[in-house]
Image (cartoon, rainbow, N blue to C red; front, side, top):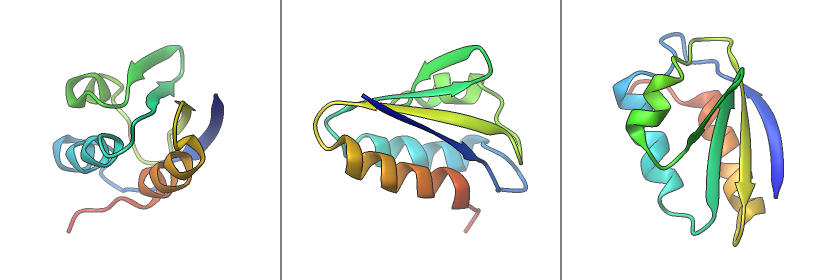
Length: 87
C-alpha cells in the first residue's frame, strides 16, 4: 500500500462533475483506492462517498492505493486530484 497527500486546486472543489470524472478514472484500476480528508476515509470508487467529503479548493486530501497497478494509479489519480477543472 502506498499513500500520498495532494492539494485540490479546482476553484469549485469537488462537486458532481469533477467527482464523476475522478471516480470513472479510479474504476479503470484494479487496485483499492481510498480518499482521506481529515478523519474521514472513503472508497474512491464511490461518487456518493466522495461527495460526502466536501472537498473544497486548497483542501489537502490523502490517497491510499493498494494492489495491482498502485504506482500508476497514484500518479494518474494524484494528477487528476490536483488539476481537475470544469471543461
